[in-house]
Each structure stands twice: as structure tokens, then as C-alpha cells.
View (cartoon, rainbow, N blue to C red):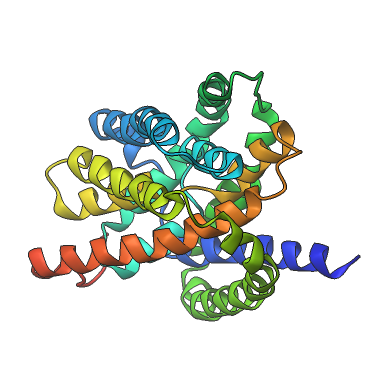
Length: 290
């Protein structure tokens, strides 16, 4: 096993542990939250899986972007919520049930919606693009459904154990993720820099901003839910995006660099959004609500 394989395995393990960590606070009611609220579920799916891909096609056509950047944005737009996002949302004081419920619902719906949405990517590139539902199911099962299920089960049957291990698991996951990502960023940095130009950063920032605005407007009357959907619409699962890209565009070697550039820009744009939310919504970063 070479170093690159070990690093990728470490990243996958860190993501699983991150999901497990916040799932230790969750219940089965949290996981089913959106399925019991069809109106909220419909707005969430519309924001993430319908409007965002359509807006992204417009962005890809409006800017003269490197093909790898276009592929990265379009595949990210049709991917589900990243597994590590709810932790960020909960730290911001978001509604825990909605954050976890959205992660679960988006993961399950992605098995059907991602292959359908990938057709949109194919039309944008005038190419036969596809991804098997089974491949999507495998990714979301390992990174989302399994750790969420285990976390909820441990909390239900062994609540004291859940309280004791949540901290160490979450801390260990964060350290493992940072240690794993730094070498990848260091190695990919020249490729990332090579993609900058021709409005690339502006296009990626526009992608993030449109996602935030769309989710914020469709998030409903509860302020914290609007924040969760805004972040979820602007932030997507890198594993699914890379799976789509590598299966259909193997010749584009810079897609990983483009995805990394997106996440760097996304960190900045979402941080600005969260700062704005804190200033305009007193008590926004308060205690987690369940």
C-alpha cells in the first residue's frame, strides 16, 4: 500500500468518524425529521438537486473556464451534502434535527437523483455521462448511512458510552482529517494555482454564493433552518463528485485540484455568510437545539 492510498484511506476514515461523532447526539427521530415534513423536504430537494444544478450550468456557460473546473462545479452541484457539514452547522447553533435529517434524506435521495442529474452534466458537455446508482449508494452508505445508524444505536442502547466517546472520536477525526489533507494540498498546490485565472475564482465564488442564496430563500420561516439549507446547497460531497468525474472524464487530471480550489473558496464564502448571519440574527450561535 503506497502513501497516496494510505492518505485517501485516512480521509475516508476521518469522514466516517466525523459523522459517527455527531450522530452520537442524534436519535432516529432526527434522521426521519424531513420525511415527516414533506413541505420542508420538497424545498430542500428543490434547492439542492434542481435549482443548484441549473444555476451551475449557467455559470459554466457564462465563464471561460478550464474544462476541469467546469467538470468539478457540475459534478459537485449534483452531489449530496458532504458528511462533515452538519458538524459545522451544529457548531453555528443550527437546528440539530434538521441538519441530521437533511444529511440523511439527501444521502438516500442521491441514489436516485444523482444518476438523473448527471444527465444534465452530459448535456452541458454534449457527452454520454453516467454513474451507476449502485456506486452512489456505496459511497453514501459507507460515509453517511452506516455511521449515522451506528451513532444513533449507540446513543439509544448505551447513552453513557455515547457521551464518553463522542469527544475523543470527534477530536480524533478532526486531527486525522487535517493531517491527511495537508499533504494533498501541498502536492496539488501547483495544479491549483495553474487553474486560477480567466475568472475561475469568481466563478467558484458565484457557485458558492448562489447556493447560499438559494438555500437561504428556500429554507422556510425558521432562521436556523435557512442557514442549514444555505450551507447544504453551497457545499457538496467530494467523494461523489470525484466518482462521477473519474468515471466519465478520466482524461481530465486536474479535477481533483479544481475540487480542492472549490473547497478553499467555499471556506471563505461560507465564513462570510456565517458572520453575516451572526450579526443579523441575535443568538444565532447559541446552544444546539434538538
